[in-house]
Image (cartoon, rainbow, N blue to C red; front, side):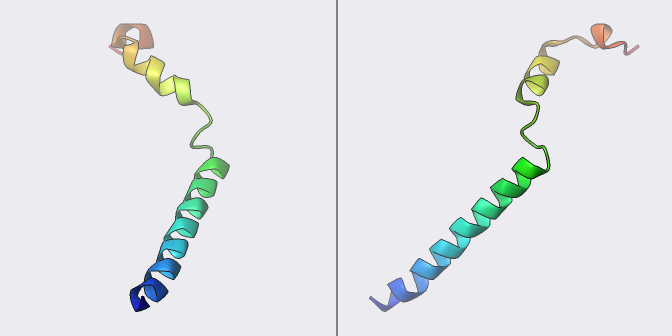
Length: 51
């Protein structure tokens, strides 16, 4: 029972940390262009103008 006294605050802290990291990623624009990278994989280098 005493381990729950330690584990519950640790779990809440880690959950809050994950929420802060997710909100930071949203605000910094990490999720702005989800389809761009997926389509870029399918393009050949010739169509990108690389020699």
